[in-house]
Image (cartoon, rainbow, N blue to C red; front, side, top):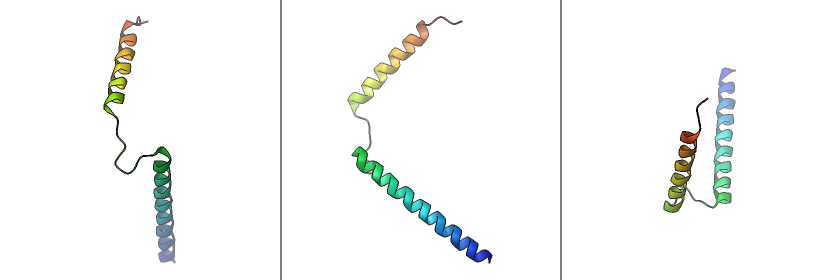
Length: 65
């Protein structure tokens, strides 16, 4: 009886894993990136650092209450 429960549990885990892989592949196809190709460009990294610098400067300029 317990063997059947474990077999059903393994089947459910396998189905869940398979569905998660399908969703991941679907999301990558929508975004347009392939496996391992998702990375930031140099320009976007520079823009992010500029934005972060502006945020830090704004936080430092705010008076502490």
